[in-house]
Amino acid sequence: MLTTIYYIIASAVILIALFIGALKFRIFDFKGTVAALIVGIIIVVLGSLYWLILMLIFAITAQVATKFRIKDKAREKLQEGENGERHASNVIYAALIGVVIAAMNGLRIDGFPYFLIFGVSFASVNADTFASEIGVFDKNVYMITSFKKIKPGVNGGVSLLGEAMALLGAFIIGIAYIILDFQGFAIVPLIVITLLGFTGCQVDSLLGSLFENRGKMSKGQVNAFSTLIAVAIAFLIYL
Image (cartoon, rainbow, N blue to C red):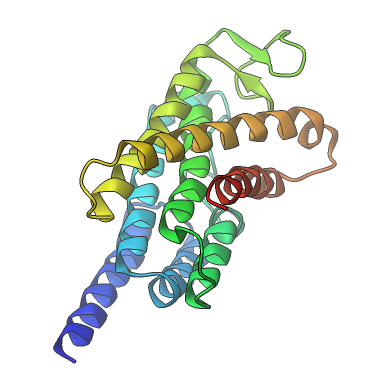
């Protein structure tokens, strides 16, 4: 009983901190902050407090990447929102696959390491965020489908800096997972999360080039579907 009370208190403190911090540091607009709070509650109920902490680590590190040289990005009109803030639709598409994984965990559908696969979902989103927000400063950008040189910020563009940042973004979530899973330094989960997160980012670039640039998919749909592909591979690995 006492453990349950501590769990509820700790969860409430983190959720309140998330809500206040998101507004104070303009991580999201108001609707996006409310959406993030709702997602956080779902993750705590269907996953665990550690799942919420991993999602919070994603939110913080993604925001660091988003705010990186924000004035320079704003000058070129490459920033997210007015000053890097994200909207409810960004939150929903980024967290959608993670919420589904949490629901599967909550329904006690056995046979899969759901926390690890949850990590893959956010590794994919974080990889894409790091690649797009920091990789945009590489002047040597090439379309992933044709390898023709293009302007930074174009959907489907890849660069050496962007690819390195994609790996870093995924790796951060992999490290967060192995710390929160309390299984020691487990190298295999770290590799799986990092590589699948990186893979999701590449799928995002492909879909951006083939569909988003042609108006057949929105940015959010591309993000969600690329994350779904990375997660589907994770499920296949652990069948």
